[in-house]
Amino acid sequence: MILQRRNRINRSSAAIRSMLAETVLTPSDFILPIFVTEGEGIEEEIISMPGYYRRSIDKTIEEVKEIWSMGIKSVLLFIKCSDHLKDNTGKESWNPDGLMQTAIKAIKDAVPGIVLMTDVALDPYSIYGHDGIVDPDKGIIVNDATVEALTRMSLSHAAAGADFIAPSDMMDGRIGAFRRALEENGHSNVGIMSYTAKYASCFYGPFRDALDSAPGFGDKKTYQMNYANRVEALNELYNDEAEGADIVMIKPAMAYLDIIREIKNTTTLPVSAYHVSGEYSMIKAAAERGWLDEDKAIIESLTAIKRAGADLIATYFAKDAVKLL
Ligand code: PBG
Image (cartoon, rainbow, N blue to C red; front, side, top):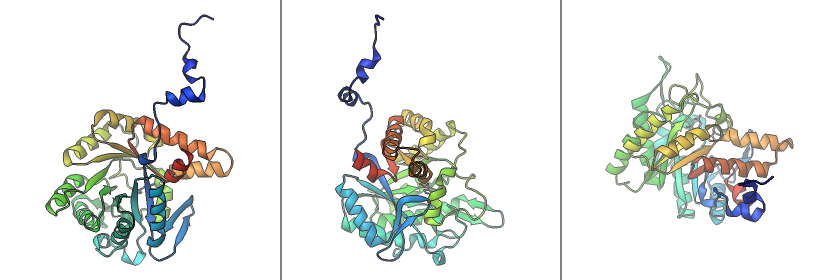
């Protein structure tokens, strides 16, 4: 054949492929989610997330030091609240001496440069396992009272030294309420990474095991988005932009690459994506059976998420990915 164009030329060696790669992962792309639990010297593997751990604060600090030395710049903190502290107000979530606040201070003391992000939602603190305050008679999650509670929680994280708060609750008006409260309380330097388009997804299953936070009744479909919807994500984006979000996040990631791209094409804000627990566990489970090459699956997945438009990726594979790069 005499061809005018031979596209394979640009793929013909590892060197040319590397030169022409449109998407390249780097350690500073990643945010590592971290699960903190009470106690000392504790490192418990999460059964549905093989190779991933809940740690007490002392062990968490060792981990954060290690990932910082690997070039990972950010962690996203979650805590496992003891059962006796759970209620329907979430008041433990703004306890200045609570597990989250203590962990924030300890991590910032040990690794001051780390970009410390904190989860803001009531589910770990809720006897109902919901992200907000429940009206038990009506069986609904009450929006405005929840935003009030989450605002107190956000301020307590800021006071403890968080760099970004990351609300994962999907209540209406919370970004504006947090921004105003941060401004009014001397925390104008604290950012908000909003879970802008967070879908009601079965892929959070292993995470709920990790924090013992599965909803006690019903599901989260009256606040998290319907996975059938794309345009609705833009509504959430417009609100979050207007209300003062600094980073907008899409969650989950792999099944939502179209949403990541849609939001990336629509906003001038940085975009992040959360490669969630179920996405981690799927790869782990298939690899354990020898059905997938784990290392290749990690890098391909994360590259695809970045290619779709994510400037940042929250992923349980952050350490593995950096080792593989
Ligand atoms: C709760 C929260 C969830 C995740 C992050 N924050 C679970 C949920 O909404 O039920 C999921 C993270 C993951 O699955 O990795 N506010």
